[in-house]
Length: 406
Image (tube, rainbow, N blue to C red; front, side, top):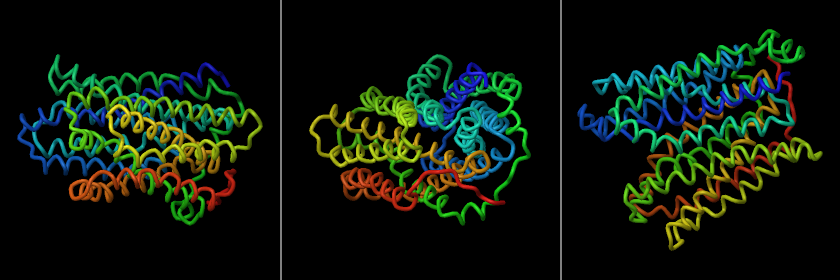
């Protein structure tokens, strides 16, 4: 296959996942201005976030199924198109019901992004480069999270909050032109072209859910996603309430852990592929990196007790670094096991499980933080990854391709 084309495709996936996280974070940056202008209450804002999570969770699975059927190019392209339209529509909303509907639509598009990215990477990269490619693909999300605060503040300051939604949405439409403008089948090796042209084999959800390996991947995501949501959504409140940082100071520091996440997404994939090239088995390479990541998360309980904010941010960055190593190899392991027929479906099912878990656990996180402290939350955060790694080792003793009948 043409190396230039596949790296171009990977760069486009990187941009797509970056836009995915950027577009979803614009609202959290502009909600104060929106509430003032449109008289939207905090309770209504809570329902807006719930609406997004419901469609996001649903489309992880539905989107994954459709992408396994129709391929990464069509699936990821449709996903970006839907959420870019939703983002632009945010810029013309005038009522709570419109915001709720557009946010739900945003979740419909964004939920299929990562299954689409995983499928596209599988279609273009073999097992010796797949982890590194997945790391780049996923790393775009972290870079989007880093860019969102300053970019949103800049656009809102110059042109008003509505353009903070419209401009990223228009960039998404430009991305679509470039994405669909590149022919895939004419640019790849004949064997890959033949494989991609084969009729899609649809493995039923029931069959997938009955598979023990699928169940383990779903359980792992169910256990770990609440930790990541805690890091994303609750750390600013922790820094403000327990570390007495101003919102301006939080803005100066909170991008650092996400930068660590983006770098580790790429580095984690590179390390795994490097081990494979040095004659490690796929099983050993993925698990060595995931085991290292799980061990690194044991720093989390110390975050609440260190004396300086600089050390606390450093430990948070190590947590994000560990998550990047973990999630890249976790998604790559799914592709290693389930191949072209079920990768997106299993990534989708696990993502749905993680989003549902996040919806369940978030109120509990708030209750613990309100009635006790953040100490127990940091303690649990440090335990969950080692627990997930033990589950992986026990119930998936060897990461290898398996055949699933229809």
